Length: 295
Image (cartoon, rainbow, N blue to C red):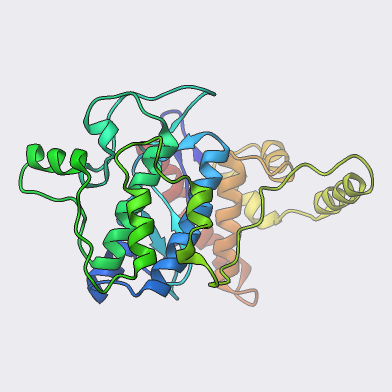
């Protein structure tokens, strides 16, 4: 993460398998075992969001990215997400029209998790059939079809999958299946899909804390890359601030740039001349700083 006075830049890993929308387009539709694997992972992702009271509000195939093997799915694009308080309902309309829940279309106040489930239902239907369940030429007709909640499911879709779609795409948000009900549905029975581990909790006082402290102390004793630190000093960074940020694993400009330059040096190879690696790193550093300043 790189902070500038006007913006925050998140540098994340590159998912080179494209997104689920591209996968569906290539294969025309997904077989049910593949759709199950993808939906199961999405349930983990959305459940993690809801546990932190974060409603995504833009769940769609384009926002589900894949790794190279196209077996691991990750959820992206939280630009329309919102954090809600206990008992709070939402009102503003956001998201992609074809994936929008009927209560939002009708201008009602809504509960975020219910709307995310509706969008997951639209996503599942699109994966299984290759087409959106609700689509029309104009916005008025599209809204009418969504509020009616009537959609066609081809005969080749299994009975269990059809039943799950009906439960997820129920126009009454109170009767709509929640994430737990989806997990326990017959469509997932016998699949043996792994459940993501629960969120990490702070270890209780005692041996675990002592081990963590020892690990942190050991990490603090590891010397920083002197060449990288020197280059950052040449570029105007304070050496003490760089070391404090790196030691504390702080999410700021100093720690982020140090990590980027170290990674650049490693990619050049341990047996490369140090001066060549440093020269390349300095050039990369100037590019990063210039880009951040321009942003």
